[in-house]
Image (cartoon, rainbow, N blue to C red; front, side, top):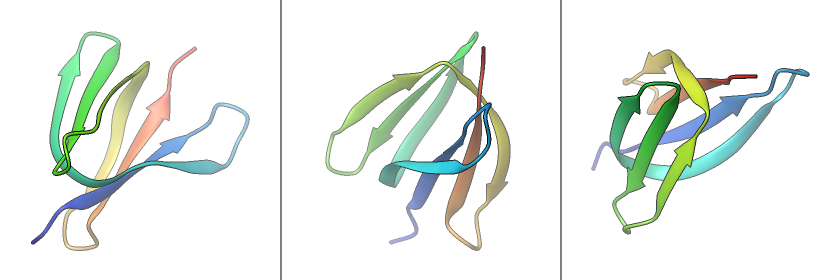
Length: 64
């Protein structure tokens, strides 16, 4: 399997792991909808900053 881990880049600095084994990422205006292969769902006020698919890593940037 090739699922990625999702990290949130905080406005004050630092990264936080917010989801493992990402299956779905859908930008929805100023939010991002995430769903893992285990069915966990989250909505974050963030934007996609980077996606490194070979490294299985997605970086979101927190919005104010």
